[in-house]
Length: 253
Length: 180
Image (tube, rainbow over all chains, first blue to last red; front, side, top):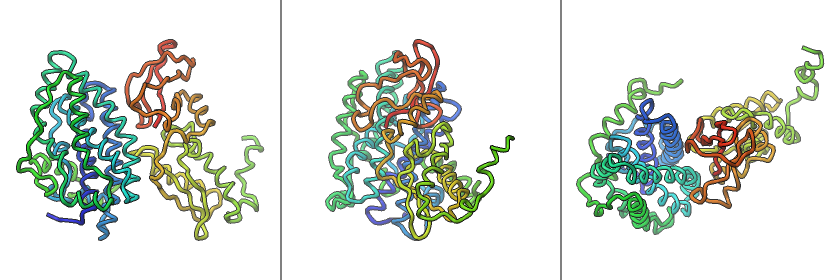
C-alpha cells in the first residue's frame, strides 16, 4: 500500500469517497423506479464526479510526480483507495441506496461545512463549492428517508432491513486518525472533530421523524479504509470502473 | 442573402490587426455572444460564469468559474470562449478556471434572467446569499402565465442546475433554474 503525506491522504479520502459514491449511483442508469428519480440519482452522481475531480486534481498536484486525476481514479488498486466504507457497499434496493446516500450526505455536509474554514485555500475552495451541491443532496435524501421510513408497511420494513445491512459500516464516519488530528491542530484543515457528534445528531433526528429506531453506535471491526482494507465489493466495483483504462491505457475520445 | 448581411463577415483593416489590451471591452462584447451549450438562450456573461477579463504576458486571459462541480459543459465553454476570442482577432487566448469564490445564481444578470424566462425556464427565485436552501421552499413563477401557483415535480431536471416544476393554473411543465 502506498502512503502519502497527511494532507494528500486526507484529500484522497474526500475525493475517493465522492468518486465511489458516484460510481454506485451510475449503476442505477436505466433501472431507477421512476424517471424523475433516475434524473435525480444521475445528477447527484454528476455533482459527485465533479467534486471527486476537484479533490483528485489537487491530490495529483500534491503528489507531484506527474500523475493526474484520471490516473488516480483509473489506475489505483483497492488497497490504495481511501474512501469511506459506506459508499462502496452494494446498492441493494432503493431503500439501501437512499440510506447510504443519506448517511454519506450527512457526513459530507458537516465535513464540508468545517473544511470551508481550512487554512489551505484549495481545500477551503473545494469545500465551499461542494457544500452548495451537498446541501441539496442532503435535503433530498432526508426527504426519502422520511417517505420510506414513515410510508407504507413495506417501505418501513425495507428501511429497517437497510439499516440492519449497512449500519455496521458507519463507524468509519466517526473516527479521526492521528494524522487528521495533526492537520486540524495545524489548521491546515478546518476543525472537523465535532463532525462525529453532528452526524449522530442529524441522523437521530431524521430517523426519529421517520419512525425508525436509531441503532447503537457501530463498533469498529477489522476493515480500515485509511489503510486500504476495504470490503471485497470495492475490488469488483473498480474492476468495472477501471476496465477501459486498464485494457486500453490512455484511451480517450 | 441580402448584401447588408455580408457586413461583418468581411474583414476590415481594423479587424485584421491583432487585438491588444486596448480591446478588452470588445472582448467582453464577444463573450456576450458565447452561449451556454446547455441553455443556449443565455451567454456565459449573462450566467456570471466569466469572472474576469484581463491582459497578461502579452495575451488575453479570461477567468471562468464552473456553475456546478460536475457540469459537463465546463470544458465546452472553455473551448467556445477560446475559439470566439481567436476568431475575433486575439492571437492567443488563455482560459483559466477558478473555484473561489464559488459560483452563485446571484451572479446571473437581470438581462440573463429575462432571457431565461423568455426561453421557458423560470429564473432563480430570490437571492442565494439571503436564503439557505434548507429553509422555506422558493416561490417559483410559471414562465408562461406568471402564476405563482406551481408545484415541484422533481428536485432535478435535464441538467444539474435545474429542477422540474409544473404550473397548476396553465398546467404547463417547466424547468426552474435552482437558486444556489
